[in-house]
Length: 137
Image 1 (cartoon, rainbow, N blue to C red):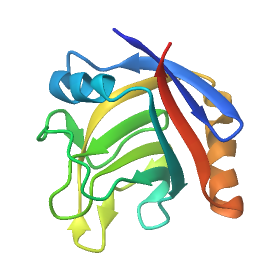
Image 2 (cartoon, one colour; image 1 turned 135 degrees about the horizontal axis):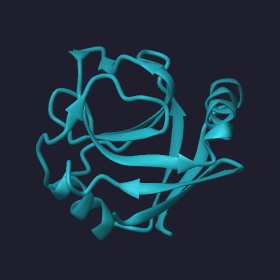
Image 3 (cartoon, rainbow, N blue to C red; image 1 turned 90 degrees about the vertical axis):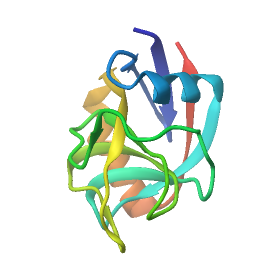
Image 4 (cartoon, one colour; image 1 turned 180 degrees about the vertical axis):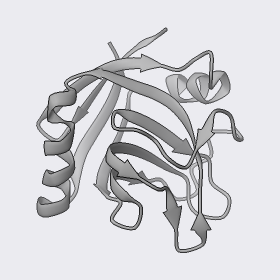
């Protein structure tokens, strides 16, 4: 499993890519690294933060997709009904948009720094957009 570091706001998390479960998504994202964006709150879907990516195309379809990522799981919605996005759950999430239910590819699992994941989510909720950077660890 390829290790990854995620620096979001003032917090650093580490984890790994889910290459066995989402090989195409992982390969496409690793190719785009380091990946830098902003995160905002997903109030529509629950307790998560997301990076809206517009029409960015990673060239992948669905694999290992879920509507209900768990805290510390990161999913990629490859676009279609709604814009491309990356979502990080910090609590309960039911992934949806104004177009209805969505699902994304679970491609990263965070394994350390999780004691700060809820604090990150609340910081984004109350203070607004934060920087996020994904890099190989």
